[in-house]
Image (tube, rainbow, N blue to C red):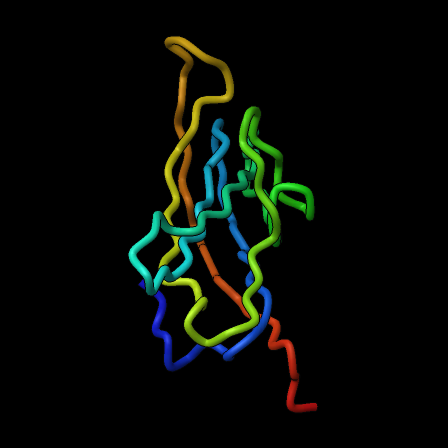
Length: 119
């Protein structure tokens, strides 16, 4: 879970991921839904094909990898009630079926760019 008091009232969210191995970790950003509708989700992934890979992404078309069959835009919000609630990471095989999968996620750092930066 993300602490809402630490997030700006409006902004954009990105994720730094450091991973090694043979996998494509999937990053899922979950938005708050005050009216109990299904949550707004942003999906994107990063490859790892050996030693540590460092990636920074905002969404599937902005440094993250697009996922087949999933429409996903960079995660941003304009109202305090639309702040993201959580980040989930799950491993995804690079090829379907019984593919070998071994990876280590060393570091995940969510970061936020305020819509109205104080500087």
